[in-house]
Image (cartoon, rainbow, N blue to C red; front, side, top):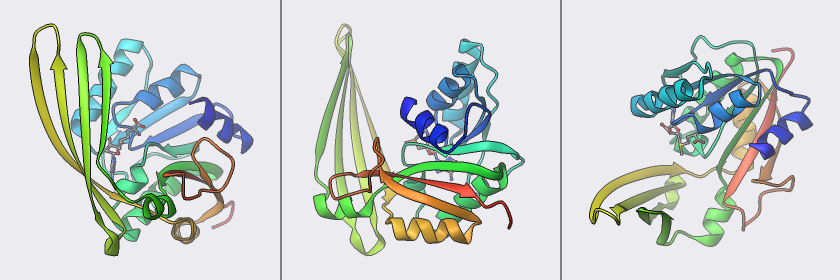
Length: 232
Ligand SMILES: C[S@@+](CC[C@H](N)C(=O)[O-])C[C@H]1O[C@@H](n2cnc3c(N)ncnc32)[C@H](O)[C@@H]1O
C-alpha cells in the first residue's frame, strides 16, 4: 500500500476517489479507505464481494463494493485513480479482454486520472520457466500448505497454475483439501502499451514491482502506470 500510494503521489494523485478493479476480498480497498481515499471496488466473484462487504462493515468504513465484470463499463465515473492489483490483468485471457479492462478504467477516470495495475511479465516467465512451488503458512493452530503445479501453454502466452491447498487445524487434527486452477496470461510491455494507447491512455511506463526500474528476467511481477488523455 505504501508503495502504490507513493507511485500515485509521484503522478500527483493524492487521496481522492479511487476505484479498485478486481478488488477480491477488499484488502487493498479497505486499506485505501482507512488512509482517507474515497474507494469503490468491483469483483467478478460474488463470494469475494460478500467478504469485502462484511470486512468493510466490520471496520466501519463506507466502501461500496459491487459484483460485476471489470471488462464491462459500469456506472463508475470521475475517479482520480484506478488500481487493479495482484495480477487482475493477467486473469484476462487475451488482448481483447485486456483492452476491455482498460476501457472500464478509462471510463471511470477523470481526464488526466491515473491507472496503475500489475501483471505477470512475460520476459521473466520465459526466462525462469514454470516449476512446482510449495508454500507453507503457519498461524497456530492453522497451517496452510499450497502446492502450485503449472502447465505452460507458450503458444498462447498462458500458464495454468494448478493449486492444491491443504488447510490443517493442528489442534483438532483436521485437514481440508481445496483444488483450483488459475489461468494466467503473461504480458509484455509493448502489448500493454499498445492496448493502453488504443483505449485512450498515455502510457507512463512499465516497471518491475516494488521498483522504479524496468521489468527484467528476474521480476515476474511488473506494473504499468498510464494517464487518461486530456483530449480524446
Ligand atoms: C489474485 S485476486 C486479487 C484480488 C485483489 N485485487 C487483491 O489484491 O487482493 C484476482 C481477482 O481478480 C478478480 N477478477 C478477475 N477477472 C475479473 C473481471 N473480469 N472482473 C472483475 N474481477 C475480476 C478475481 O475474481 C479475483 O478476485
